[in-house]
Length: 320
Image 1 (tube, rainbow, N blue to C red):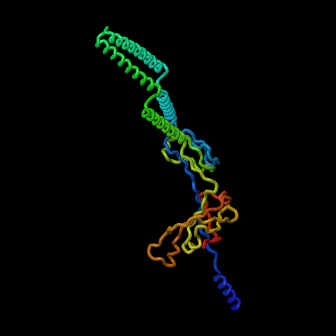
Image 2 (image 1 turned 180 degrees about the horizontal axis):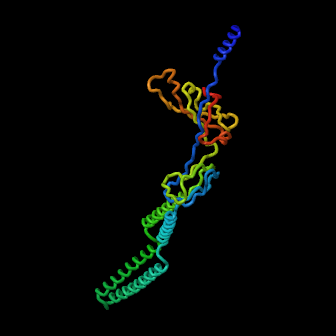
Image 3 (image 1 turned 45 degrees about the vertical axis):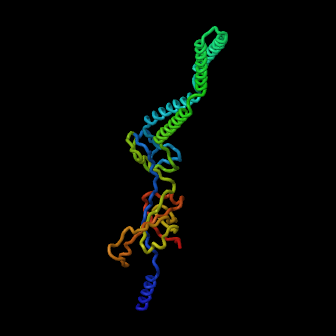
């Protein structure tokens, strides 16, 4: 009996000396949601999705009231049309009838000049024969000079009418047209922001407003979850921290998930979640835990849900 008891004690002592597998480290699944919002405020007039629905990238999500933005687009379009018409008008010059009137005035001036030149020639001939006075000749010369100046004036006016507005005036009109087009683009952008589509293919995790409610600018209306946009979050004691660095592979399991699955460590917190108040002894070092985040493969992520408890069972490999 004594010999059997000693043998049993030896077996128990040997078993106690064997390394024990580490206890499971508890954690949970956390999702990285995409919270879709509009940059402008407005009343929610349409919600095109429901919780749990799968949506493709570009699918409509919701619409805010946009009567004011649509009216602003119409106003901007009218201003663009007005400014562009003004540019064309200034570049084209005066209208056809105005040019015809200027031409007629020039023709009349040339006829008057021809008549005054004929009168001046006759008065000079009479003056040479002594049949007219010097004063009459001087008056005829003045009339001829005045008619010549009038013709030059009318010719300049006709050239100006054909050329259109001055270069500076046309440049100002072009700048005004460019400003009107820019204002139109702004109005169109504001209108487009009232109809929001899905940025990626994802599942609708939650809808945060109901139709008819007022939505502030930047407030999320729909929460999306991309396939595989899940991560495992654990709190690891400091004695395992050296083995868990970004790039390390760990093995985890959860209830109802089937066989254990692997995940890759992406982030290790730089500070402990709980720090002992006095000194670092062997006992209080156990209170030091560091947050570790790991990403499962897209295939394994499909069987996980946000908030699901998971356990870290094994460190498969660590970064040296």
